[in-house]
Image (tube, rainbow, N blue to C red; front, side, top):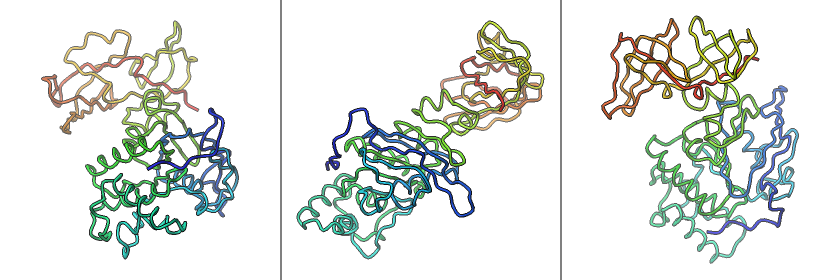
Length: 369
């Protein structure tokens, strides 16, 4: 299948552009508050965030299913803000499969083409191509009730792709599937999107889906964008405690700056002495965060070099397959630690004293607002 040819546009211009996009409901509360976003042609962008953050409302405004209260939506340089949904040529895959139960798989996929009054021969060819793309060609005559959940979602994807949409919109399409099937289908969706070179907006609250599928992630909170960047940027260089805590697991401590100089700061976290890799004003309260899998445990320690080192005692240990999850007590502060299983590595027992170390690069520090 080939994607629809867009109008000519400047090479550096965004393919999809949201400018000041907002949605305010009758009560006055903003579901989306002035969103600005530029998406390149062929890019896979994920809107990520907790329930109620505005990500689905944003996607539905792009699709034309919700009218914005303010702002503008452009596709290939054309303002489509006031264009009805059925004329935007956008393919939408919903969380619920939304298939017609009385129609066959092939007729479900053909529905959008039939509404466009395409010639019968063209419809049959494009339906055949779309079903082959999602590996369902042999099930063309079955009814949806005879399909598994994963197969039904593939039909929904084929129905969205067969119209050769300008933008593919996916609203939590994997949330109704079991864990293994979700993993398989997310890989398939990403592979198909790359092969077609189609621009895609994917909505999810699942951080693993966002990290593994996206070119860029737009992390939203309370109707606003907290940070936009590649999965690695959001994971390694979060812009706020909210981003750091939402992307992956994190230990979080509150501390005060007690010394500063030479490109370093010393912090006091309820009696626990830590170092940060930048100078901060004396007395400022900060939030200190470190990921559990970046903490290393040893029996004796021997210093952390350029990093942080604390003595602690193991108070909890859980075997979780690929990792052992521990809770350690350091001067009354509880830290979570993850250690990989296998390889003959040392794993302490409950009640055992340990040295916990991590690097300054893994010590994230945010001044409290």
